[in-house]
Structures are given as C-alpha cells and as structure tokens.
Amino acid sequence: MHRLWNIVEIVEEIVGWVGTMSEYPTRARRTYAALTKTARLFYFTARQHLWAEIDTAALHRLLNVHRVKSVPERVKSYTSFERHIRSITIDGDQHSLSCLIDAYIGMAALSPCGMVGSFAKLQKLVLDVVPEDEDTLQFCCHYAGYSLATLCLVPSLREIDLKFDVVYLHELVDQAVTFLQAIPTRCTDLTTLRIFTFTRSDWIGPSQVPEEIHVVVLDIIAQLPKLHTFHCGVWILCPNHFKSLTQHQTLKHLTIDDDCDFDEFPYECERAILQMRSAQSLRSGWFLPLRSLHLELSVTAITSILPDPRYKSDASGNIVDQMPLLETLSITSPFTMMEEEEEEYESVSLKYLIKRLRICRHVVNLSLDVAFEPAISDREILLLAKTWPDLQSLAIQSSYRSDRAHTNLTGLSLLHLASHCRSLTSVDLCFLRLRIVPLPKAIAPSFVLNKLRIRSATSTSSRFVDNFIRRLWPAAEVHLNEKCLNQDAENEVD
Image: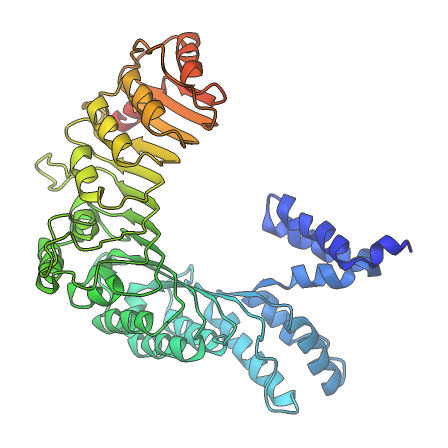
C-alpha cells in the first residue's frame, strides 16, 4: 500500500465526500456500508460515518448484534459501535420502542458494570414519536418514547429536537414534564433546543399546550447557561412566562413559528405582553444578545415582539436597548381572513416596520413576506436603504389577495439600493411595473452583488432590463420572472 494512505486526513476527506455529494441520506448510508466491506483502508472511517446518525431501528439491531457470541464479545461489539453514535432519532411504533427498551435492559444486564455504553459522544437527540395509525397503543408509544429519550440525556448532548402531539401531551403531561426537567440537570452544555407541536384532533389546537409545559420549558431555558438557539411555537408567547425568554443572557438565534391558525393569538396576550414591557420599563433590555430572529406569525403577534423606540429608560430618558445586536431578521405573515363572513385582512405598512426596527442598526440580512398595506413604494425602499446601509441580502414579498396590488415599486428602488447599500450580495423584489428610470452619470457600479431576482407583473423587455441592471451591478446574475405574479394570481383564483 502506498504510504500516502497512511495519512488519516486523506482517507477521512475521501469518505466524507460520500455524505457531502450524495443527494439522498439513504444512498449515502448504502455507500458507507459498501465501503466497510470493500477495503480495510476505508473500514474504520466509513463505519464512523455509517453509525454517526441512527434511528431506533438501527439501535435495535445494534443491541441485538452477534447474539450467537459469548456475553463479553457481545458487550465489546456493542461498545465498539456505540462510541461512533453522534445523533439518535427516536421514532417508531409502540411495539418497536418497547422491544428496544427490553433490548437495552438486556444489554445492560450483560454488562459487567451493570450498564452499557452511555452514548459518550452523542451530540443530537430527536424525539419524534408520532404513530401513523390511530390506535389504543399510542399512549404506550409516547410513554416508551419518553423513557427511551431520558436514557439518551447525556452530558455531551448539544442539540435536542422535540415533536409533541398536543393531544397525548395532555394525557402524559407528567412523563413529559419529568423528561423536560431532566434536560438542564443532565445536559448542562446544551446549545440548541427546538420544540414542535401539532395535533390531529378537531377539538384541541396545537397552541393549547398544557400550562405545566409552559412553566417547565421556560424554567429549563433559564437553567441552560450555554443555550444560543431556540425554536418554538406561538404558544411560548404566554405573557406570564415570556419575560424569562426575553432576559436570557446567551440566546442568539430565536425562531417562533405559527403552529396554529393565525387568529388563535388572542388580543389579550398581545396586550399582556405590551403591559409587561411597559411595567418593567425594559430596564434590563429586550433580547440583548440576539443575533438572528425568525418570525412566522400573525401581524398582531409580530408587533408584540419587535423592538419599539417608544420605550424609554426611567433614568436618562434614552431608548432602552432592544435587540441591539440583531443581524438577521426574517418575518413571514401571510394574509389570513380574520372572519369567515367578512373579508378583513391583517396588514402592516413597510414604513411602520422600518420605524419599529430602526434601533437595530446592525441588520445585514432582511427578509419580509407580509401583507403590506398600503403597497410598498420607492420612497419606503429609500428609507430602508438609508436605515441599513450595510445590508448584504434583501428579500421583500407582499402576500396578498390576487385582486390587490402587490407593490408599487419601479426601477427607482433598484437605484436607491445601488446608491446606499454598497455591500448587497443578494436582492429579491417584486414589481407591479418595472419602469426603468434614467440613471445619473455619476452613479458608481457595485461589483459585490452576485444574485438579483426580479418579478414583474407586467411584460418588460428582458434585454432592456439587463442593460439597466448592468449599469448598477455589472457582475450580478439576473433572474427575471415576468409571469410569476400573474401565475400566482391565477392559482389563487382557482
């Protein structure tokens, strides 16, 4: 064998490309399995990748491996594979989970120390116990899932994804609370926590999470000193407990999505959160370490979370710090009918959002998909460009009914962006009519922008638009989709 293959980094680079270049995870796993049988050179490295991410079925096979061997050989074989596990997904039905727990207990009984490997290198845990069939064993399935997930709470864990069915969350609230309470005790270095809720029931909504879960989730967040990423549903906006989330000292990335209907966020919650902000005068700030904020909520919920320059400190009268380090902001609030009989839609003006967010001076990535009323104009784009001159990416859409104008933007908006935002690398805008405006002779082209996506409701000469854009961004890759809005409107009518 050539001495080149003695360099471990080269072998790891070759095997690592299997997962990087493969389009489907299952195909990558088959390739890893084939590599372990192809050559001794790739065996150890391929086995590491093969067992890095497993599900309950793979763990069950591992616990029952080599049953024909002696007890010491079985334990040794299990331990040699278990030390490669980095991620576990707990899924499956009640029978498979129960068999898995029995196999785990059986392997523990065989171990000389009374226990098997402790997943010493486990970094990610995914709990997704959602039976496909509605039967009487679903409660047992969720119970077994909590029991198995508790065994995976180890000090090395850095990331946890939880998917809860709210119906069974009410029935097994004690088991869920016990599992959640064990997280800060066993996983002190946890950095990422994502909680997803859903329901198949018609009588209970996904936002109707038990009060005990509200309390314990925000309690464990406060007890995780290294948590920097949190993803949750709109139910976390419970005013009685939301304050602890706003005061977290290490939270850098926050995502709150609407896992229920938009009209389930009551006016009382909005008013309670606003009163909470006013009562404490935000003396200690509002999401001070936050770098990234993603909101997929109704306009009512969004406005209750965003910074507000009206809040002043009691001592100096200056505006209190609210998301001062925010760099990435993504807001999605598709139009929704407020009442079934009357066509009323939640909307907001772009100018209002800019005024609310102008105290966040470090925003460089901005994405807005909101039902704007009135339609956004060139003047608002100019205000946006002057407010955040260091923008690197900008995407604005206006989700609205097909019979209303999406936007009143013209080519003047592109001129404003090219003149004031010299660091832009990506732009995505919708135009009602892409009217080209004369360019000043003194305009300096920017070679930073590499991607520009334009959607126009009216027919425009692509060659004419391309010549106009080349004067502003000579190196940009232009995507002109003139029929996009018309097609969307036809689909909405259908």
